[in-house]
Amino acid sequence: MPKGIKRPEKEQQKIDSEAKNLTLYQFKTCPFCIKVKRMMRRLSLNIETVDAQHDTNTREELLTQGGKISVPCLKIIDEHGQSTWMYESSEINDYLEQRFAG
Image (cartoon, rainbow, N blue to C red; front, side, top):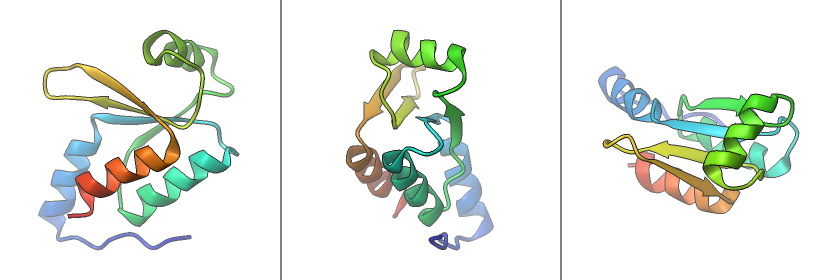
C-alpha cells in the first residue's frame, strides 16, 4: 500500500473540496482500477468511488453519460457543472498527478 502525501490541514481541505467534483467508476478487482486507486492513495485524494460492476444504475449512468461501459472511468465536473468522462488508467493517473501532486 502506498503512503499518502502529508499536507498541512488547510491545503488538504482545499484538495478535498476539489476532489468532490470527481467520481471514479470502477470494478473492485479490475487491475487498472486498482492502479488508479493506488495513485489516489499516494496523492491522499478522497475521491468517491462507485461500483459499476454490480450496481445496475451506476452501470447505466456510465453507459448513457460516459458513452461506454469501461473502467476505470473518472467523471470530472467542472466549475460550470459540465461533465467530462476520462477513460484509461494511465490518462487518469497523469491527470490526477498534474492536478494534485503540486
